[in-house]
Image (cartoon, rainbow, N blue to C red; front, side, top):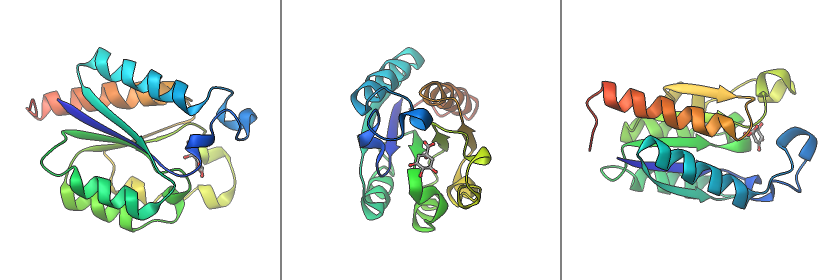
Amino acid sequence: MKLLVLNGPNLNLLGLREPEIYGKQDYAALVQFVENAAEEAGFEADVRQTNHEGVLVDWIQEAYGRYDGIVINPAAYTHTSVAIPDALKAVQIPAVEVHLSDVSKREPFRQVSYVSYAAVKTIKGLGFEGYREAIRFLKEYLDDQGGNA
Ligand code: DQA
């Protein structure tokens, strides 16, 4: 089974960026963590990061017919983008939304997620572990759907 893991803007600055909120580990450590978690769950994973909304939309569109599931941390685009959930709805690939921090306990502008409308589940506030949880959830979800590709 093939998994696409997408990370949005500023996640490449993990470690440097507000470590009290996002932790001290860097983006390379996140990629390693996610690749291990995906392998444990039996996925072949492709982990990507971009600072550009349109690139996320392109990657979601290109995933059609190629990937069984998507894990996405849209970062700041979570709270502003309609194009990302529209793309997820268009390709109909089950997607789990992940946030390192607990966005529900932060600034009011982080309380809205447009991406949630297109996600089968949202996981927040668990740091890197949230990605593992998302991957495990997707595996069970796809197995239940008979989605073994
Ligand atoms: C984030 C939360 C967003 O509000 C923020 O803009 C991010 C990261 C998280 O992982 O906690 O860039 O998605």
